[in-house]
View 1 (cartoon, rainbow, N blue to C red):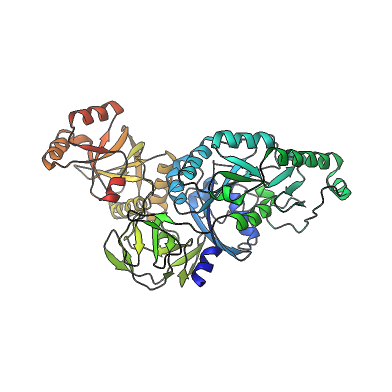
View 2 (cartoon, helix red, strand yellow):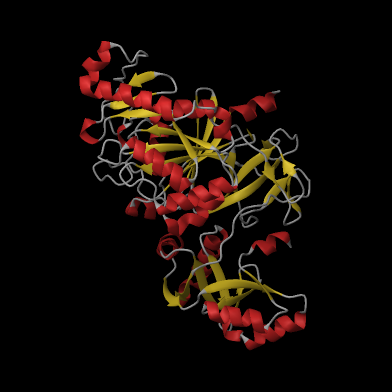
Length: 530
């Protein structure tokens, strides 16, 4: 019974958006309303000296963007809330896609002025592949933006999902008065406060109450009444089941930076969002209430605390109960490991956990045993599947500028590659290091971290490759012939798998035509199955 109760308490979700929609600010405010922090920091505001809790890496503080997924946990209204804040920038989409495998639902943040943007559409596709339940938060209502009804139409057409407003804004920009909570039928009027929870909240249920006209003015009050009539006429009643199956997205409006609408979002979220869900393995589907423990690593982060040079694997628990100092089977390595100091997170603040349940994300100190996608169980041989892997699109060669710092460079690049921020290909002769990423900004981050966290001296030189394909063949001799013929384009990844670096799409097609016995893999997924 206790196990089932613990599962039902959990709410594990990701916050996703296009860059600059206000995702990290919303994360901060959810932590503020959840009592996890007392003062919220602004991601890009120099007047507020405290930077955002979830952007703890030095480069994030400098640039005001999130480049790594942060994990934060707090309790609210009897629920254990686990937030995974993701990078919005497309160059770090891979980290976000992987994180979406570890959550049970999603809050999608949309800027009211910009509406649905390109990155939002891509992220939504990943959510739809898994039928992940989505709640939409339309942000920055304190600025002038698109008409709320137009925004709802845009979400339905561009993201291919039905919507149902559960809150409604009163005005916009300078005329923004607050948010009417449709779900609970009450009105909350906030005064703008960027760092603390405002105490000045007026709540009442009857929209015909003349006090409404006195508080917000006759015209806005009349407008609110007619818009709510229109909503009830156009949109179906909210049905939690259609939300849980990923068919309908409830919509909330607000201004995260001013704390407008955040409490409505959080209160509704804890009531309607799903408790932990099952996950597919290569053997069967594992459900949260299965008695035996299982989980998978979806993220690895080195130097969470630069003082201690630590490396942490983030494990999403899928079933059973995880306990400290208990031996668990590492499926890929085929050996048992135990963890004396598993941690839970408040961004970079960590605390040791004795036990954790399905839905929880725990950090495991790692000396190099883990890779992204690894499965831990109580002994059952199975691997969780569906953690995406992408072929790189941009390639640069890593140059060592100080031979005395070679050891630091080798250690740094190995650890960063294990985190999954990019892929490393070694070319012979000379152990030349070619780094492949899906976005240019990743190179800036890698360089910054190699220099500042590892003390290496290095630079990047662009390489003219179109893509990287992993190559295998059932005929060893044919594989040797191919690598001999294409020696200038052959490399090994960090696991020793052979890779063909194709300079153009045409040269890749020619290679596939001329060497029919070679299989060219567009992702490294084949290694997981091996």
